Image 1 (cartoon, rainbow, N blue to C red):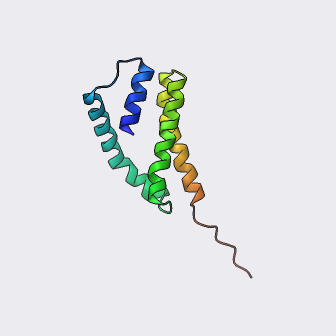
Image 2: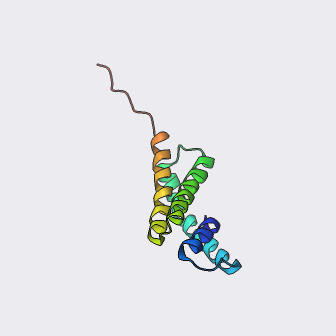
Image 3: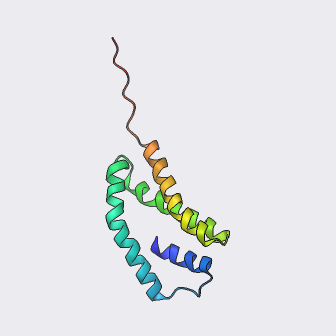
Length: 107
């Protein structure tokens, strides 16, 4: 995620292309955040979701949100839509794979 968002963030900010140091820093920051946040989200609400979907769908949602913010040329939308895209994907997965409803006991 850090690699894709680095390139898109530079475009939105109108900054020169990212160099290796930019990529290394952002990959490190996203790696540390992912180390602490991802297990909690996964174990708390996505435990029934296949691992490959837990990884790819929120990533795709975040990159889609970042891409929309980039196309609109808005730094604020870029910062808002990136986590929103990941969150919407995670919520959709949680709802799709939630435990089946327990039928009422017959009397």
